[in-house]
Length: 113
Length: 112
Image (tube, one colour):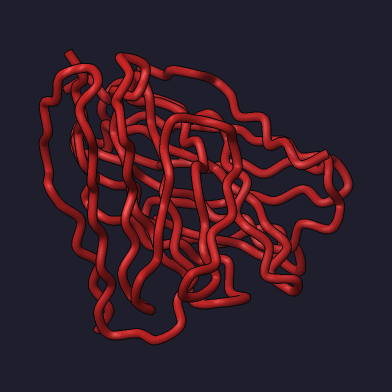
């Protein structure tokens, strides 16, 4: 019940295209859903996060869509750029109880010029 | 502002040798501290976490141990490294009960 399933494992997108990464969870108690971006040889960094009281959050070219009934959330990268090439991790936790983040397995995104 | 320092950045060690990776956090008090391992550049495996000095919880049985001698210091150790200990080790911290995690730059360990 603590799993977060992420897909696809890898994604290749042309410059200017839309990158979409999906995650699904089982634990309905999760109340915090962040996305992390990791460049090769670096630690992951928080990209954007959402709470279940909203269905969408947008920050620049990055948007999280959240579907509470389906227990799914996704990251959309609009106008994808080669500089967006990185590994992306979704995660979930129960903030009210201070639980640790449960991470998805990661998606390696390559944006071709 | 808060910062996290992790060292060494790269380490090549022979099988059977000891290991010590160190992590310190600045600009915050009473953080939760974590050690993750990332194999093959992909998934993040939580190894240890700590909610206070001397309080260590282990997520998976392994050849490694962790210690927290000071509030903002977290150390990952091994007495005898195995080939399977190779990987990218990440230290992270969080403000308690927020869930938001901040990672260090990582330490690349190669065991030969």
